[in-house]
Length: 573
Image 1 (cartoon, rainbow, N blue to C red):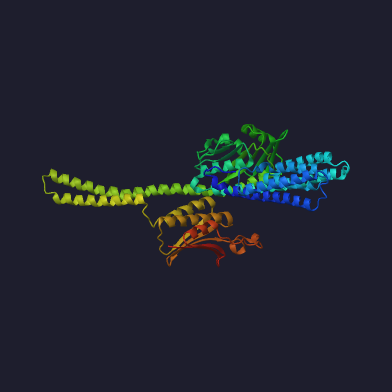
Image 2 (tube, rainbow, N blue to C red):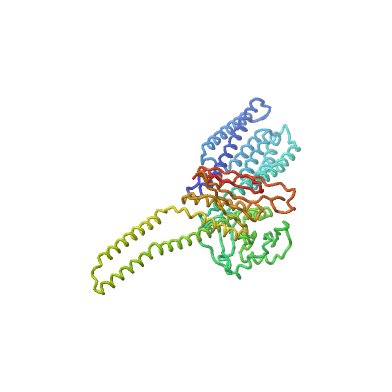
C-alpha cells in the first residue's frame, strides 16, 4: 500500500489516508462482531447444539484473527490482505454454519458483513461476486450439515438465499455507486490540481488524458483540437495509450481532411458506439438532452479507423467554439449513458481551465516579446547612442590629426570621461538585468494587455482604473496580476454579464483591489425573464483570499448600490 516517491505522490495522499481509515473501521467492526458472537454464545449456549467445543474454539480463533488484523491495520502494515479479507470471512462463516445448525444457524447474518465490505470497498462487481458465492455455498453447506434430528427447514433453505441475493444485490449497487462517486470526485480534484499554468497546455492535456484513460480503464484517449494560429487548417492530436507514460511533448499535426471523419457528428451531439453481438451506435443531443436514432455506418467507419469495438466520443470546446472532439476508446467496462453524462460534465469543468492556461501562455509569450522589445529599446538608447557620440568624437580627432593639429589632449580627456560614464551606465544596466531590478511600471501595462486578450476571447469588456500613485515591487505586482486574472476568470465562469470593472486604489499605505461584475436580476440588466429568480449567493474566492492572506491582507465580498458584486482585496504596501 506504499506509494512510490514520484512527483505525483502528493495527489494520492488523500486516497491512501481514506483507504486506511476505511480499513481500520472494517477491521474494528470485524473484531467487535467476532467478540460479540463469542460472548453471546457463552451467555446463552442454546446454539450451537453440537460440536460445542469446536465451535467455541473456532469463534475464539476468529476473534484472535480479527484482533491481529485490526492491530495491523492500525499500524498500516502491508501484511493486511485487504482485497481478500471478505473472502476469508466467508470461509469462517461457512465453518460456523457447518458446526452449528446448518440452514437454521444464527451465523447466517454474518454473510451480510462480507457483502458490505466487498461492495463499499471494491465496488459493484466485487459485491455481486461475494453475494452469489455466499448464497450458493450457504445453501449447499447448510443443507448438507443440518442436523438429521432437526431436519431440513425448507422454508429457511429457500428464503435465506433469496434474502442474500436480493439484499446483497442492493448493497452491491449502492456500494458500487458510492465508490464511483468517490472516484469521480477524485478525478475532478486531479483535473483541478494538474491544470496548472506552470505546466503548459501540452503537458496539462497529456496528464489529463492519462487520468481520464485510467479512470475508465480504457485502452486509449484521443483529443483533436484546432492548431494555432486560428487561421491554420491543421489539427493537433493529443494521445494517451495504455502502458505509455504521459509526457509534455508537442502533439502530432493532423491535416483537416484526415481529421474530418473524427469530427463527426455535429458539435451538438455525442456518440456512443458499442459492439455487443452487433454494432450499436447512439447519438446524444446536447441541447435537448435526449438520445436520437442515427446512421450506424458512420459509427462503424470511425470504429474501423480507430480499430476499436467500443468508444465514446464527445465534443470539446476550444476557446469560445466547440470545434474539437474527445474519444475514450476500448474501456473494459461497457460504456453507458452514465459514463457519457459524467464525461460531458467533466469537459464542462475542463474547458475553462484549458482556456485559462491558453490565455496565460499567450500572455506569457506576449510579455516575453514585449520584454525583448523593451531591452532592445534600452540598448538602443543607453548603449548604441552614446557609442555613436564616441564614434563622432574619434572621427573629429582623426580630422584634427590629419590637419596637423596635435593639440588634442583636451579632446582625448573628454572622450575618456564620456567612455567611462557610459561604461558605468552599461554596467548598471547589465547588473539590473541580472538582479531583476524592480520596476514600478510593470503592473498596469501587463494588466491592460491581459484584459485586452481576455475581452477578445470571452467577449467580456473590462474597464481598468487606478486612483493614487501605485508603486509596487515585482513580487507584489505578480500577485496582484494573478488576483486580477483569477477574479476575471470567476466572472467568466459564474457571472451572467458581459462587462466587469477592475479598480486600484492606493491610500494610507495600502492598496485596494476591487473586481466588480453586475449581478443577475431585473436591476442587473438581464431582462424580465430573470424576474422572480433567486439571486446567487455571495462567496469568497478561495484562491484570491489565500493569496491576500499570505501578503498580510484580507478579502471581502459585498454588493454596492449599483447592484454590482464587489470582491475587495486590501493589501498593505
